[in-house]
Image 1 (cartoon, rainbow, N blue to C red):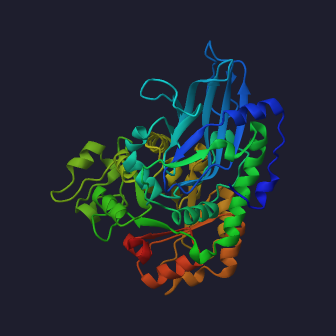
Image 2 (cartoon, rainbow, N blue to C red):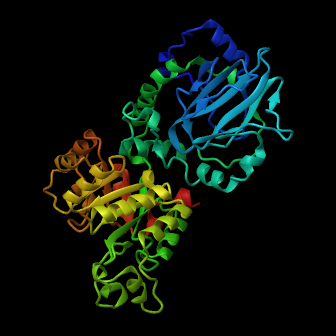
Image 3 (cartoon, rainbow, N blue to C red):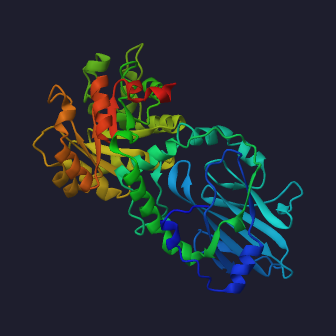
Length: 482
């Protein structure tokens, strides 16, 4: 159980002694992986004596005919292996004699009945028992469910640990305001240190009554301040030079494969990139495609302009031996399968094309792993206005730009100084005063594209949020490669 200073601010006063005692008597047992680093700290309970909507989960609590009541346990962890903030749910249904007659539990945004091999609720000593997915904490009635997701779970607990930063679910929209670039990097840093290889041996048993049980409202009043406290604690304890920097493969691993090609993206993932930087252009039939130049001359030796060709004509124009320009949908499909995010450099813009890009990101659950960037302030503003939840970045080449004023005018999340050729040692242009002003404005910082190991090390020491590189393996600390 957590014993930090902030934990004492939780109001533990029960509204009903009888409901509190009932929730304690029937608190389930959770079986965790033997190496699970995170155990529950607080549980918010709600007792239902008639059917009603859940106050914290998108479902109706319907009491079966033989049920006298149901207890909803909203189980809080400070951490899930990929993000700060974790809340899962277990529902225990009791008959008039307080015997457990049914159990439901949450599972990746939905919920399922918990049933054993005989289609009965799984019990140990009369209490409900569920199995927790390693690191991720979704609930299952048996290890078999979790073994089916073993590959995904291992990736989440390993290379993908911390990638989601601060998680703000719809339940807390407008109440938690800590999903900021620096906080996301700090969470990534913290959780990457706790990465582990799951055993799928669920021998670590946690009786839920060992957590602090409080009425659901007490927990929910406390959560926003709890998230903020953790963000401030990470800022206090993790100095800039130790912060995890996003490894962004510039047009994929373009030093080793055709730029903006599916092969380059696969190579970037092999080299442990977090994201690929890609360029968006639009064909004559309004298909968003991934290409840097407006024409095919430099990469393909063809004089045609992308905007003058349909997508099918673009494919046909590809010379033998080269990979065709991919659609954005193809790239989104590939990156979702590889588990890497997207840094989008918008070279052309239209509302219809933007909506097509948004639709692909939603389809592949990539929105939270995507940053939209552009040199065009008007396009950056349009993208943010169309979808305020997405992260945006404003690119600029002049050293005389006020980055804070520019980003605030556009409601951007990141500033991206393109100064790699502005000085022999461009990191020196990121002066302490410049860095302080940007950080005080809660803005993230992305730099590109850098191949020199000395400059990469200097930028990492400054604590920028992301670095683009044609050689993404140079962004990976040697210890991570080993």
